Image (tube, rainbow, N blue to C red):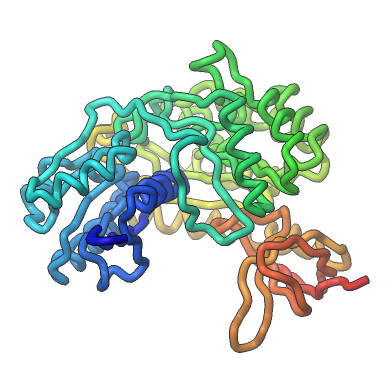
Length: 439
């Protein structure tokens, strides 16, 4: 490494942010910098921040303050850098650089300038960059899993969401570029590729003039990787062709992450998602008919301004009626710069918290019932961790996506990063328990 500085990266936020982190690591390693996971040993710490909601910003600020108190030279990247560039430079003298969400690919140049004593602000007002298969990358996930970003940014303008302001408009990669990267990942031994973007069902509209997710899935079906998982499938984009492509393509898991946010047409209209109210029930029924093995996850927002008891009851019945496998529930976060910030009839936090708890309590027996249906089956499990004390293995079946769903606790022997058959013996509301099946 010679006299190059040692750099650590503190990663916060979503998997889109994780991919940015991995590209920064890859670029720095390629340029000859030492990369260390131990922040104490590093001369510079890059903090890749999240700014999606207030809780995420608090975590980012807490991390920045801790590093400042440890007298570290901090490079702030990501969504919070895009959002609060001036304030961050003003309030954190330890920040030697602020790099926007569309500028992470210039990280080597930024570090070089900082080493020359400059304080750098590099924030494009409208992010337009997206990395591709030629951009160096150093993966930080477990060895069997990789995220593959098919597009960046978003053209929707949901009333509660600041993402388009932070990440720019949608920009898709070509099918050829994505397939090439998938082949690279498969050659590295990756067993599961997770396709991500803000709205994966809108993939390709900006470059092909129409959505191309079905075509992409069929091409990825030719890649020698056992599992391909889709995140962020908006219901309007789940056309019969997309659903057919999922059913026909053997390595595409029938797992659909549907960020529905709500069920009541009034609330969806207020969220600036009026198109969704007409399709929610229909699309879910169609998926269940066409893909009987489908695993459905959704995320919901409770406490949106103006949400009445009647609206909330509609949502509660919706959850009970459709019996999703996994449900994530968030309370509304009032974000400055979004239309929802100034809406009347904002709800107190205690009401939002109560409603979140009600939905979670309604969902628990549904999740338990779904998991109990797995008892007695032999399912494929990707082994990701081993408890060093007990030797117990921890992995996931196709039903579970990393970090957001449950896990499978496994007895028996298997190598990390491999998919093995596991006989499921027990289940609770979140996790499964089983034994490796040996021939």
